[in-house]
Length: 162
Ligand code: NI
Image (cartoon, rainbow, N blue to C red):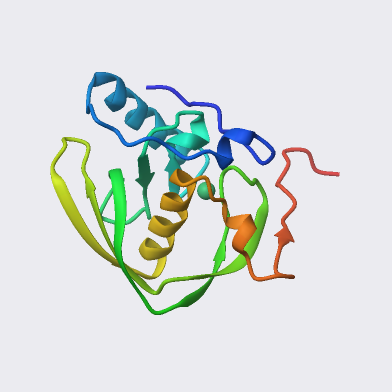
């Protein structure tokens, strides 16, 4: 396993659409392991393959609860219900946060990392994370759909104290 480099704001790859995955092979398993490790390293709740420079439709999500890391291959949002106004950030936009309207509930269908069909009904933070990551697969980034005027830049913590 390895930490992969995260593509950040300004990198054109983030605007590209990812391709459907046809083969769930060893190379994909390595990618998934690396994505989970990279997400954990940077304390993210989600990461899409495009964010590590791979245009494949796979995302990982971890809310740090008992559900553990969730892997979604070729995810498709089948239903959306309601709205929630939430605070959001993205590992590709370090230290930037903004408010955004997301569906309150979604139903997503995908394959898990073993190729089994799965269906997840999600609400609150999980619904938000799924929508955010599926957007990445379509070349969409959260910053383009935020509520105007809500963008905040939070100074990163540094090791040196003055
Ligand atoms: Ni993101």
